[in-house]
Each structure stands twice: as structure tokens, then as C-alpha cells.
Amino acid sequence: MSERMKIFEGDITTLEVDAIVNAANNSLLGGGGVDGAIHRAAGPQLLAECVTLDGCRTGEAKISGGYDLPSKHVIHTVGPVWDGGRANEDALLADCHRNSLMVAEENGLKTVAFPAISTGVFGFPKERATRIAVREVRAFLDQDVGVEQVTFVCFSERDFDLYQRVLGMALD
Ligand code: AR6
Image 1 (cartoon, rainbow, N blue to C red):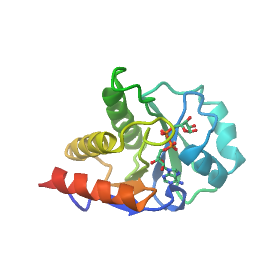
Image 2 (cartoon, helix red, strand yellow):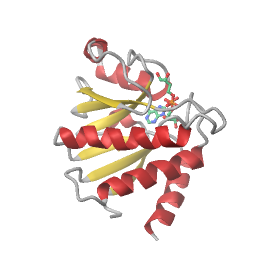
Image 3 (tube, rainbow, N blue to C red):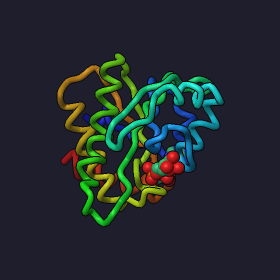
Image 4 (spheres, rainbow, N blue to C red):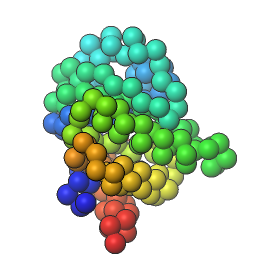
């Protein structure tokens, strides 16, 4: 299992995988954070395709091409905005991971990379989000699916250490 879940510290737009997941917003028309970085690196054709996708509900996921990115596809998901834990945030964040992986599976993709969805602008507590992300990815991979490898992309050393700790516990 440890070979099927990896941690990478750095910029998700540099990864050569079948799909990188975007932490988008309901419009799917771009934004700041990792969403902005993905649109910049993919080029204007990504936005042109996103316009045709008709938005995305929180917790759901939609796929597009990767255009100028080294990854073949982008799977856009919309994480919950943290509201103190009173607004079903945990379940919605779990849905983001599960639905992104289901979209990958439906499209025959084998390698997928996730950023730490909702933990930037949307304010989800990092450790809580990391535990949910790892639990959902692990449960999905345990079903013996076509997706072979999932990379958790950490944008700081601190996030990398957190993922290492949570993954270590998950694998005990
Ligand atoms: N590669 C990997 N991770 C990154 C990168 C990158 N290039 N850039 C940032 N991160 P955020 P959210 C990390 O705010 O909280 C946008 O405006 C970052 O350090 O990008 O889901 C959307 O349009 C953090 O750990 O996403 C939405 O409106 C993580 O990515 C809103 O922000 C997520 O931070 C979504 O907010």
C-alpha cells in the first residue's frame, strides 16, 4: 500500500501524471491558490473547456484536458468552505476525494495527484483535512481499482511532515 500512496513536496503543476486534481470553486472559472497556478500552467484552453463544464457542486468532480500541463488531465473538485465544522464539511471533503477518484477510474486513469483541498483560502484545519484525505484515498485503493498510484502534493515542508505523520499512522 505504501507504494500506492506517495507524498511529494512542491508544485502540483510540474507533475507528469494522468491527472492532477484542482481545488476549484463552484464556477470552475479559475481563482487563486492552486487553481490559479493550474490555469496559468495549462494555458487559456483550459479556461475555454471549463466554460463548457457548467460549474461543479461542492464535493463533486469534473474532468478536463491538461493542455500545456505535463499531466494529461485535470480533475476539478470543489472543497467545502470551513465554517467551524457545522456545515457538513468533513463529509463534503471526503466526497471530493472519493468523487475525484471515481472520475479517474471512469476515465481509465492510473496515476492521480491531489493538493490539500480546502486547506488554503477555504480554511479547513490542516490535520483534520489530511486525516480525511488519507482515509478516503486508502479506502478507495483498497477496493483493488484501476487507479494505481495517488500522490499527495504538499506545498510546504510543514505540510509534508504532517502527511508523513498521518500516512505513517494510517499504515500501522
Ligand atoms: N501546488 C500544490 N499545492 C498548492 C499550490 C501548487 N502550485 N498552490 C497552492 N497550493 P487553495 P482551497 C496549496 O487556497 O483552500 C481558489 O481561489 C495550498 O498551500 O488553493 O480549496 C479557488 O478558485 C493549500 O495547502 O484551495 C477557490 O475559490 C492547498 O493548495 C479557493 O481558492 C489548497 O489551497 C479554493 O480554496
